[in-house]
Amino acid sequence: MELEQPSLVDLATDRLRAEILSGALEPGDRIVEDQIRRRYGISRAPLREALRLLAQQGLVEHLPRRGMRVATWSPTDIRQLFDIRHVLERYAVLSALPLPQGEGDPLVPVRARLAEMRAAEERGDRLAKDDAHRAFHAAVVGLAGNRQLELALEPILVKLQLPMAVNLRREAELHSPDQGLERHAAILTALESDDAATVLEALDRHGERAYLPL
Image 1: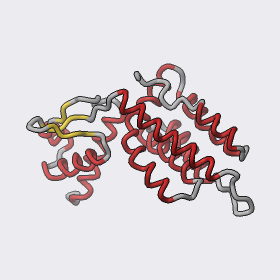
Image 2: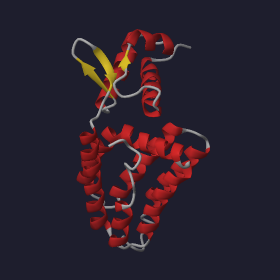
Image 3: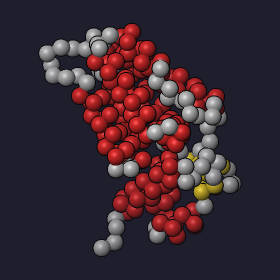
Image 4: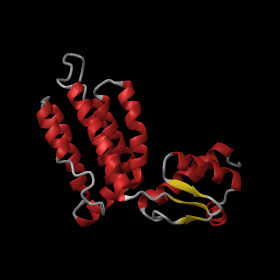
């Protein structure tokens, strides 16, 4: 049975996104539609919709009269985006702590995202690990229960998905995959202390861009 159009769009979006986040397509690489259509076995319409969605995520960009390419971010852009994320995380921690007592474990979402990172690493699914990684940071900010804060963070994490993935990948290559997991486990351990100063120190030591060429 022929796949429906949305399925073809999802297929193209997921495959292109995986190639970009894995480094198979590098920043600045030109995206040749005809080549990708033949490789994926899809028509022009779903591919163009996939490219539109990836452009919204900041992963590809349109060059006038030259087509599409994998998005490039300057070191200054990346530093500024990480700085904004850091500010939002610190504000969330100061707003959230001390955590409410007697209403179950408020850290369940953070624990779940870390568990998803571990599970993805164990099965070798880098894309799922990247997704869980971003969701972990979103869950930390979510502890504040501030919807507007979460909305402010969302586009930052979307734009940072490639630098965050690159940092984790290079860390794993230079050291071990477990090191990235341990860095995030340290944030969870600090949150369990329910002490704002301890958590802020853990965030300061997080090293979210230690392996990026900034």
